[in-house]
Length: 311
Image (tube, rainbow, N blue to C red; front, side, top):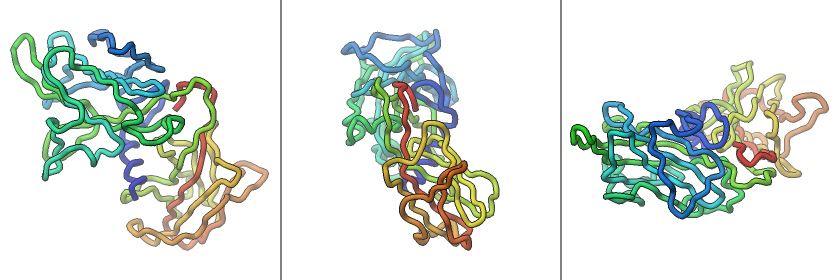
């Protein structure tokens, strides 16, 4: 299931969400040693830039990828540490890392990336969010953007040429290289309620599954990778307990539940529709066939907030 695969990838980097935009190694603002440059077109971000290390094959940081967004664009800037300069940059941004240009061995090919340049003043890109996500802007909050950022750096002291990638997830076990995940800040100052899909249980075989054998609470993950609550199986029912500001969405909230005998099968539909309601906490639950060892459960949820920089 594609959504399950995306959740696994997101879980690797979106472990702790604080502030505006996020990355596995969070820097609230760029470190002092990063050379900040003025962005073209007077780009105004709605949150502080996220600084993602640019690393060489020997795991040495030589610069940073500074990423931020506003309501219409994402701004991506390659920035070098003091002893280095940049001679080439190659960038691909998209919603599915499997769509990055790659060769037959599944190795990304920087020369075929969407954005590339060489020489001076070539290290900043403004990309329209509409070119990445072909959905209404009001649904862009919390959406992940996969970044394959490659560059050639020069060591100004040794004249050495260094190939670097933005830090994150390894794209192939047989070839060094990594890609990053950036999560958009909220694009609207007025806040509001925003629809999401959610998936219950831990990732197992590329999908999220609730295990009947676990008597403790099991997590609920939104489609942006955030842990938004818990489910617990008790007395033939599955109960849903959401974190503050998260809830079922719509007048007729949806729950789709499938029972699985093994974690590898697609499952049998056992529940579809609105959850049942009870006056005590947690208020929502569904009754299930308790004979299945695994349950695949998808929810229609929403996040409501007045804070423009929420996740």
